Length: 308
Image 1 (spheres, rainbow, N blue to C red):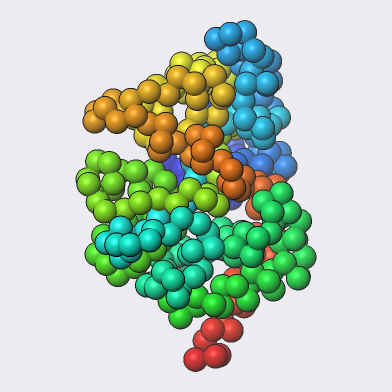
Image 2 (image 1 turned 45 degrees about the horizontal axis):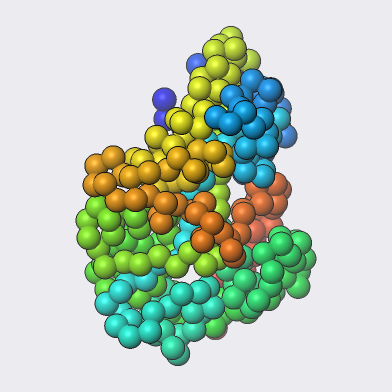
């Protein structure tokens, strides 16, 4: 069954008295909010299979991938990519370069939502990853991010659908764009598009399994989650799409793409070479700051209109 995200639909589903969903695939911020709202059943991590070498599951999963209400399956990321044709000489390779219109001119395509914008703005000002969300919890941090975004305001093209960043880059409308790593992988590897990814500053997100409160299939749902999150099954999934497995032991088993035979590790968000300045999206911060982020973004957009 189709689930579009958020927790309102879960609240409505439970209020109807007819619990038709058992296992739900959720982004971690939604899962965290749903857990806090009492919409999800607890999951015992003790039922998860150990790694092939016997390492307990709780030590094998990435930090933050296991919660009392969710177990993470895949790791995706929002990254910066660029049109190879736009920069025939020196290529951009950092978040700072995204904001450097003098060295790397051209339009910047950004998602029209307060997701990732503030993090990249502060990261480009050399704020350490581990300090980002503490700083963004203050007015000073939000103001710093807004001022940094002001520097590229006139060069921004907004996108709202996941297919648009690739379209904007391949058509030459944008020189650089933020977007989902899986989309850029498909464009470059499967379609031969002249697009390269900048892994610096990638915004890591988790997709996690949850069990809806009130289901009479909770035991079977837990067994499914235990099966799906076995290391060998996660590694198999990584041969089909460029989303990293949430277990370290599965990471070691990542091989070739099933259809085209390319090694998948260079395209994994979780590859060690890509994690140096990766930002792990703080799911709790996101679940608790929705109104704050929307207001900040709305005010920033309005400030641009008044300055026209």
